[in-house]
Amino acid sequence: MKDHMKTTKRFLTILFSFFSATLCVAQNEITIGTRDTLYSEILKEKREFWVSVPSSYNKTVLETEYPVVYVLDGPSHFLSLVGMIERFSNNIGNEVCPPMIVVGLVNTDRDRDFIPTFENDNFSKFLKNELIPYIDKHYPSRPYRTLIGHSLGGLRVAHTAIYSNELFNSYIAIDPSLGHDKNKWFNSAMPDIEKLQLKKNRLFIGMGQTMPFNMVKDTASIKKDLSDHSNHMRAIMKFSEIVARKNTNFKWIYYPEETHQSLT
Image (tube, rainbow, N blue to C red):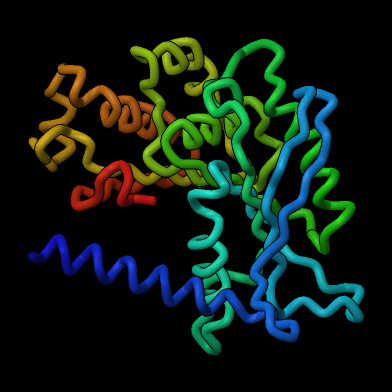
């Protein structure tokens, strides 16, 4: 019963946030964003992305510019993210974030883009050389960017924070799959994880409870469990412990009452 009430409350919060975002009303239409595309010479394909500009934007005020949030798996997270940002940036007298442009990327080949390679990383090149310049040219952006990803998208976020650190000012990895494919990426990236210096950038990781049947909740027990069931969580914790040693701009939080999916 408690879990049902918790899920219902979360749904209502997102629903309320969504309707809070639908403020751009023109005649009989309610619009929160647009579908846009560009052809990527790097990826050799047309890429679709959804863009939401804050409802407060006034085209006649030329100096109005906004930070940009890029969210991977756009169709899964775009609506709720736009709603939450709209709500929390317009809660008069109690704002917790500024108004922001939201760019949600639509997948074409999720594994190809999100499972990083250490040579010829075309997805990072696409972000740096094509998508970000396009957004900066066509939308009222300011030079502060955030990258958000969940699961494999979170793995891509972590990889970008390490190997293309200058692309974004802040990184948010939600229950990232750092132990994907029997820790293949983690083991290869280990030397660079240990050397990571965030400097002016920020990285946040949120971890849910992914042990089957909610087996354990405390991190000490998870560390002691050497089974495949705990590998996902152990990889996140090991990564976090290493990065936290040298970086005050890094933070991670364990949410024992949340699952891999509910944490989104």
